[in-house]
Image (cartoon, rainbow, N blue to C red; front, top):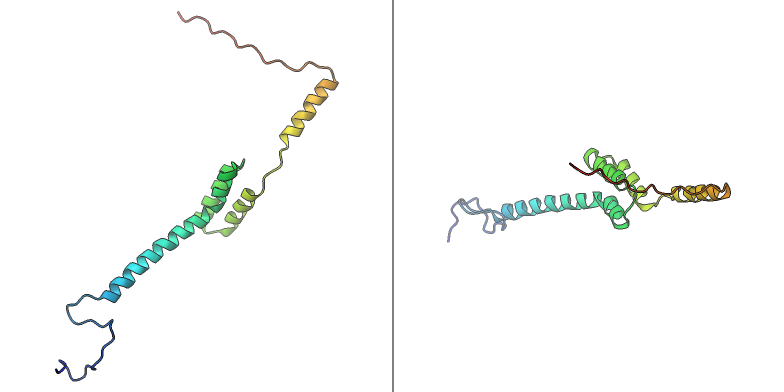
Amino acid sequence: MESANGLVPEHLPFFITGPGQTDTLFTVITVFVILAVLGLGVFYLHLHSIPDRMAHTVNHTQLQLIGILTLIALLTHNNLFWVIAIVIAAINPPDFISPLNSMARSLRRLAREPEPEPEPAKEAPPHV
């Protein structure tokens, strides 16, 4: 069996196709690149949502701030916002209001002032 052209070697690599045949290597690489780009995009978005998911699991008080910082970090590609968001999500802020309310109640008792009673609900006038 003779080859069509005398310059063509006897053995050709598998990725060289003849005229009119499907280029399988190109098809496989195209599918691989599309899946790789989609996979990297999903990984990137999953990575950016770590602070938001951390804040959701513990019902963090600064949930909206963390969400805004992660969104800004995602849109601007500025990693400082993401780092700030993850630090805020990891640290629970101290409760300053409860001790202040306790001190106010104690001072009110020491001054012997009666605690304010809730006002009774007013009845609505009859509708005519």
